[in-house]
Amino acid sequence: MFIDTHAHLDFPELRPNLESVLSNARLAKIRNIITIGIDATTNHAALEIATQHEQVYASVGWHPHEADKAGVDLEQHIRNFSSNPKVVALGEAGLDYYRHRSSRENQRSVFARMVNLAVDLDKPLIVHCREAFSDTVAIIHQEGRGKVRGVFHCFSGTLEELKQVLDLDFMISYTGNITYKNSTLLPIVKATPVERLLLETDCPFMTPVPNRGKRNEPAFVPLVAAKIAEIKRLSIEDVARITRFNTHRLFGIGEAPQNTFVYPIRNSIYIALTSRCTNACVFCPRSIQPVVKGHYIGMRASEEPTAEQVITALGDPTRYDEAVFCGFGEPTMRFETLLQVARWLKSQGVTVRLDTNGQGNLINERNIVPEMTGLIDSVSISLNEHRSDLYQALVHSDFGEAAFQAVLDFARECVQFLPETTLSVVTYPGVDVEAARQMALSIGANFRVREYNEVG
Ligand code: SF4
Ligand SMILES: [Zn+2]
Ligand SMILES: [Zn+2]
Image (tube, rainbow, N blue to C red):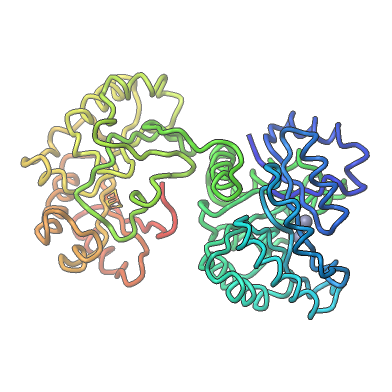
């Protein structure tokens, strides 16, 4: 199921055929659509459509093209809509110095008023920005005072601009233009953390390939999702789930993800046995938001699953390429359960991987690696740094500076006993990736660099 977070269902290209447009959307598994107002008439039309159709929500705004027509009653006009439960956002609003249909001065003034309204009414803001990036960001900073949240829709900026949007804590949404052959947006999409991504069509415009030339409609949003999946090396189901969750976070539409301990990503099945960990890594998101790729995997110690519960939840594990013990917690803290589940997985002929902080021998007060022989096919150990003091500054292990040497010893044992051992570092600012690489290679392990902003 997908959500189209930006459509103009009231536009003349779509409204006369609205019922068939919405039934096409249902057939294409579009669960919800946010239809966007751009001025007084379209704001009323958007809410009317949302009121008449359960799956449609509305956003009320004032587009920069229409800025010259905004009156003194703009605030009252927007406020009149804001208590309606079907109105989930303000916008679109922003600056457009490309088409320049209203004066820059009026655009800036109207946008500033919309940002203030978003703060006052505590609604997310849908931002339209074209060739006006620095002014747009300046107004959000100045008028938003750190209290405005929202999305840059139909994003088409540079990497540096992307970084600024991320620093503002805004989301990013992409349209069908990322599917175009000459699109320069691929590296930008790649650099966008999936936790910040939303899907949109911006229909009736921006029709994605292979329907380019036709009128766009919400039913085409899976084509945008498929392109993102290709760029981010995820499955389309992953992109659908992740963006549903992001949409829920920003606009409150749909349901929050349910707690789970067995969760698919790409064609792998992941298993979270615990949320406890002997580290408190500076980059670990588990305490803020234990969500990985749209799956909520946080659990209290009393909620940790038994081996039987994990096996039942796995169903037929041969559907997947591999099973991975992972989660926001250290799997070897539940080593007996891990072995039981791994034994069952191997009896089913499944490839088994362990992602670990490498402190399993300290945790279990013995060398556990020989016990994994024949049960774990590959192990991925977070090395994080190449020196004990730097490691401890990053991970804050319960075992203090002794932890680093123990991780290296554990890794050496894994190289000796298990078919494949990989040491990894996260590209956290200041980490000496090359020194860590040399260390990994010197003990005979593989080496992998993980992006700081990518979890799971
Ligand atoms: S080792 Fe993993 S789970 Fe533990 S604190 Fe670090 S990032 Fe989080
Ligand atoms: Zn727009
Ligand atoms: Zn639009």
